[in-house]
Image 1 (cartoon, rainbow, N blue to C red):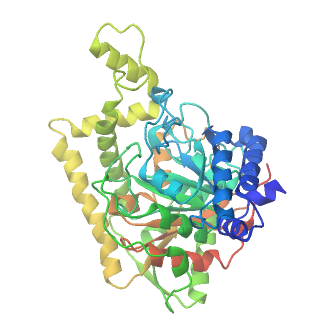
Image 2: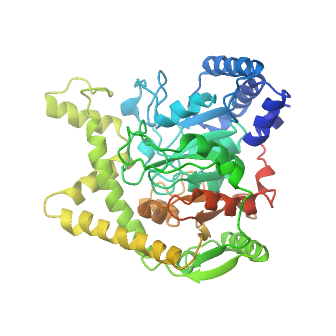
Image 3: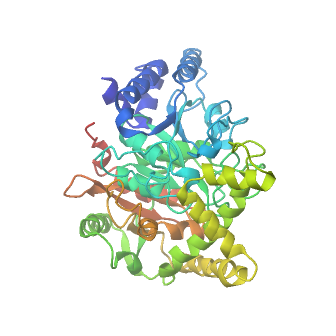
Length: 489
């Protein structure tokens, strides 16, 4: 019974809590039991505090008994990628350099979840400092894909995606810098959303690339994503990049769509390198929308082929700057017996950063160095503007959303690409542009390949157009039963 309970969508669980058909303590205990049963195989979690979660669940039940429920998330367990601050719990960013660090404060999204009554349970595995596409770069453990334990779950938010797919949690949060929510959502067969840059506060998010990072949710359904997005979105004066905009009731608006949508199909996303079974599943989704009266329009995003190069200049430059704070002096792990301060800095970073983090820091330092800044970083920023303009031109011409595959392939084998960084980087080729342009994007399951691995469909919307984007996504999600499929563990 507990396993069936943990696979239910959060909206359904919320309804059961509201009707008194379920208590938060019962739900939280079911989540704990499920994690105890399967997480040794999946490896989604870096840290769990069952006692604190059950205490929060008891508080939620007492509020409901008094008629003081805080909203639809009250009593629902939610997990956090271990790059988001939760006061009093570890914040490692899956790096040995932060192995003993305890967060002294809550991130804004954490505070908002607490205020909504959510039961916060656990910190989830990831690629170290969110640098990776497979969750194989964690300093502590590798996460497996629940649909095939020999495959990767995607990254960098692999633990967040795998936990939902495995029925360990109904809702989780991740971060997306170049596809780190949408790509693992696709490979694990769940729904994952990257909001518009600035819609969700980044206060309390350990930075990788500050102009690209954005916190967003994972869930079983689009409706669940709408429910949690409404809680975590909104202006925050502690984040200088946070945008002042009205936050609608996304969940209510799901069913308030217009008669017909214009959907852009970019030709650059359906070329060489796209797995045939992925193409077939995405084309079936296109036919679905056509059958529902959508206007399909072939479009061109001509600077797409430059996106990977631009991303790995801008992102690595920003990570080089952001990670300079991890020096062995203030709050990180510290190397033993250094000869002097410089030696302490060198040894601490050399011993505690993983190879992928080192690779990106070195590349970022190079492109920011004297004589190369203009040739690389400044030029990449100019091309970034062109990439955004490509999207905005199509939106201005009447396109409501852009439809693409999320990933060029289903999940690949653990270890298959660890020796080929370039091949690994190309796993994000369809998601990077959305971050560079600051746009919202969502991935949902649109089928399975012949080996039973999920295939992701991506929709990209206008800036701060989450309401419409969620409506279009919900139309597909609610008309198919892909989200009801569960892996056997």
